[in-house]
Image 1 (cartoon, one colour):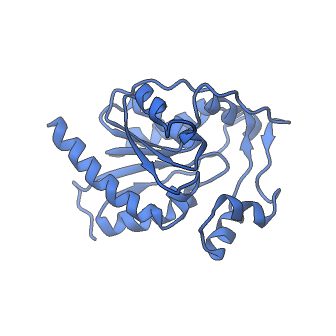
Image 2 (cartoon, helix red, strand yellow):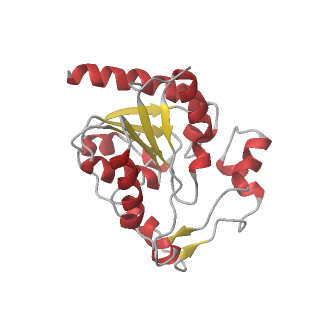
Length: 231
């Protein structure tokens, strides 16, 4: 579908160890619906990846959101924490958080300043984390994981959820840690957010499986309804 100057635009923020490539399914579906996609690749700060924290990533995203029209900010995993922080600076947008870290849980103890994901684990590890995905999709993802800053991921795990000043939607897969015990209800209450609990979905499936198409369709309707309610 051809986009116009008034077509909506969504900013999609990837998680730790991932990249803009993770939003490929979303981009294709959004293009079909006439929705613009901004999919930045988070890059290390000027002092290198080991010293890159959320502030350095947030600065990159802030520049993008300040220079472009953004109607919806979507973040996944660590990217959900960044999206939540970014929404505080750009209150004209709406906010979607997909499988964010669980606030209040002890942060993981990483053995060094870098988390080595690129080429450090076998393809079978990617397969386990992408249940239901095709062999081609698993191989594609396995070739693209990147190393991550222990500092950034530790900071993300220590976030404290609070309501954003914008309409907020929490999406959690029922097999994701964010859904543990109560299906994300407590987290949704902390965020003053609407919650979608996705059945039989894990941490990666909302982005890297056919589920992505259905979520984009639902989000388009939610975004329109939220905008209408604000008028």
